[in-house]
Structures are given as C-alpha cells and as structure tokens.
Length: 133
Image 1 (cartoon, one colour):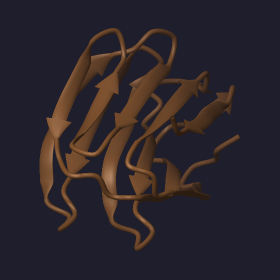
Image 2 (image 1 turned 30 degrees about the vertical axis):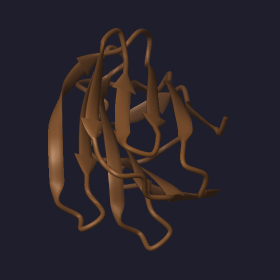
Image 3 (image 1 turned 180 degrees about the vertical axis):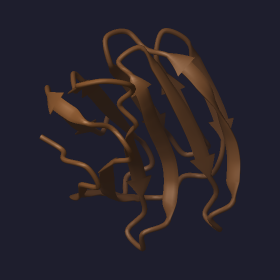
C-alpha cells in the first residue's frame, strides 16, 4: 500500500515501436481524493506520458515530447479505475470511457514511476500491465 510521499520506480524496457500499458486502479482513500500519479519515463528518465487519478472514475492525462515539453493535458472518465495508454510510432492515446490522442514521435519506455501525490490510501492496489504487439 502506498503511504504518504511514497515513490516507486518499476523497471521496464520497451524499445519496439509500440506498446500498451493497462492501469487498473482499485486504491481507496480514507477521505478526499486519491491523487495517484503514474508516469511513463524513457530510459534516460524523461517523462513521456502521465496519468493522475483523482479517483477511480476520473483522471488527468499529460503528454510530453522528447525534449520534455508538455504537449497536451486534459481530463477523462474511466470505468472502475481502468485506463489504457497506447503508444505507437506517431501517437499516444489515453483510453478511459472516451479517448484522447496526441501526435508525438515514439520514444522508448524505460521505467514507470508511481507516486502518492497527496492521498491517504487505506486499501486496494494498482495493477500495471505492459504489453507489446
């Protein structure tokens, strides 16, 4: 369980031109919102994409280019904490109950960083599944 200010780095290595990350958030908080943040990082620790769960039905997404400049951000609904991040050679798509696609050239995935941005978690877990075609 993530305690306040917990940070975890999950080593992954995806250099193929596409991958999908499935996030299944069943975390619960004692009061307020979750503020669970999940970031896709390159092998040289640059942020590529970010998912910030407000709760199990609402999340913020952000995309970044290879120079670290933010390209887009917004809010989407998800169904019981399930979010997909689909990355291919030319775009990143965030999928909840609807989707958003940002055109950006592919960069590798080297780590996934999870952090408790401000929530008081009292149960549940975050399942992370990374797949390539």
